[in-house]
Image 1 (cartoon, helix red, strand yellow):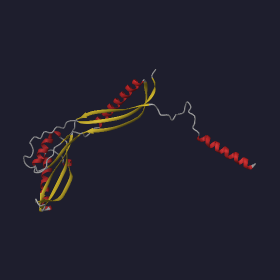
Image 2 (image 1 turned 90 degrees about the vertical axis):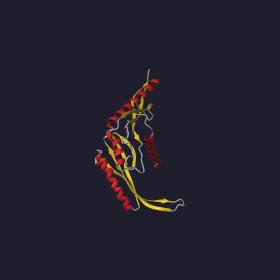
Image 3 (image 1 turned 30 degrees about the horizontal axis):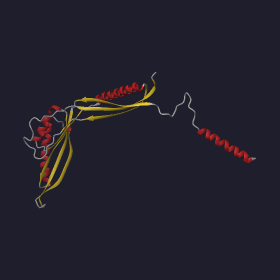
Image 4 (image 1 turned 180 degrees about the vertical axis):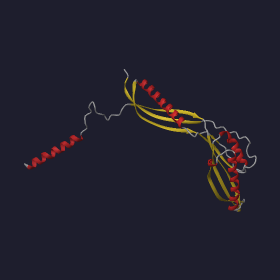
Length: 248
């Protein structure tokens, strides 16, 4: 008798557990796990802005038979370049050392034998030019003062906030328009927004301006033509809209 009661008790516990694990029926106030029908689109926005700042790398490479002599020569030339930059209106805080290297070099004859060993010192500075009208004169002046490493110019805009906002709005408008056109073509009505993802990008105008070797007086034209052009600020937005209902 006790065994029967124990068996009935175990069966009741099992039935209760199974009932708890069973999926609940979906009622009028419940939710369903079925995927929501939706339309997904990608919108793009593009805004053009005019650069108001530029960055250049300039420097000097010096060579001598000893490290001490190469350093002394390089220090003299680097000081002249810095003074020239400041004389052209570049603030001292906008002149920053970007690299400094000292390394040995060797010259070889036709038989591969070393005929000379000497040392090279390179000192390059990263320069921020805030007056774009003067950039051509700045480049010419530093070349004449002894700079023999002059790298490309990168243009930029200090504050892109407004342009970024405009590009996002254009991208959202583009995405919404596409979604509405698709919904109308499919004979359905758009519902609420389910998802938005956005990203920003930039295309910077770049002026290739490279020079190496000798440098010195008259190395460049006295009027170096530099055009800042325009930058592109882009925004891509992915949006998903629920399909509300079929149109009558």
